[in-house]
Length: 495
Ligand code: GLN
Image 1: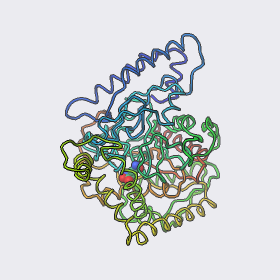
Image 2 (image 1 turned 135 degrees about the vertical axis):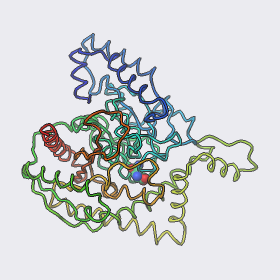
Image 3 (image 1 turned 90 degrees about the vertical axis):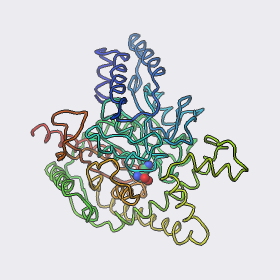
Image 4 (image 1 turned 90 degrees about the horizontal axis):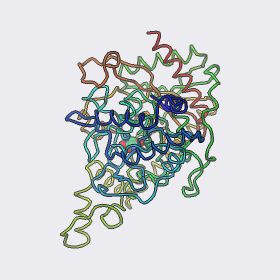
């Protein structure tokens, strides 16, 4: 049940907030136990959630005005600070970290009446594309328990997919909400850089990070964005006013929209079944009156990916310096001197992928290599922005598959480079600073006998469809996505 549906039920008093919450908690308890647990949750905020639910019920009884998210159970990725509630970034080094303040986005959720129900599992410090890099174990895909749910917002996606939260906050630095949304049949919205405050987000790559919602449908994504967006005096990179309503522009159909797909996205490496779904989606767009054209974006794909990993690891190496056991992080005892202390603390408590990125970043920022790697990557990043701007001067939207493959098996991508390739279609939007969304583009048959929490028709695997629009054009993006979603749902129900 999505946000819009729950709101109706609560306001019509068809269900109490306490009963609603109990339903969510029951599902969490069911799917978060045993050997094959989904493992979407790191910390459950049960007691606080009950308190808040009682408050909401009292408010409803008194006929008081309800906030936009009043009584809605929401999960928050564990890289986002929550006051008084453990926030680990899925790293051992922050195992006992309890923030003293809420991230602005969380503050805004609370102001809108949301219930913060759980802190969700993710790749350590959001470094990853599958959810396998967490110090708290990997997350499973509810559609096929042997497969990944996509990352790095793996738990935020999985918990919404199995009905343990109505919506979730994730983060998207290179695709981390769009990839899980694609692998889980959900909606992942990456807002324009600067649309949502990053204050209180444990930084990965400050010039690229975005806080981003994962929801069941596009309408819910618009509500979430309306709540969390806006200028924050405590994050100077933000713009736009708070309380902007992103749910208003939905009447516009797809008629006359100018849509392009880059031919580079259809090159080698794209799974045949994913490609077939993509063509069906293009057909639906055309049938709905959009004009669709092939274009060339030479920097889309491999170039963007190379630039992304250089910039991201450089910023990671600097941002993660604070996790040293003194400023932040658990401290190792019994060390000989300061250097030994740093070494032991970071060696023992940071995971392999995080260490790899710190080392890569230190390398590309070091004297002698700075110009060859970091500086060059920044120059190409500028070219990517320009290339995107040029494309958006002619087109309203650029579309691609969200990923090149359907959800893959847990453990299948042990080679880090193979894992980096998962983001081949998603990082472009982050580097260009534009907004993007992944909506469900269709389903493929799961050829293997899967162990799934869903029965019947749901024993299929979802395939994501990505739409990108220019910076600050979320309204157009959400409007188009909503109409696309309608077209897909119509086709589904006619099946
Ligand atoms: N998978 C990408 C990475 O590992 C994206 C991560 C993200 O968006 N947080 O860098």
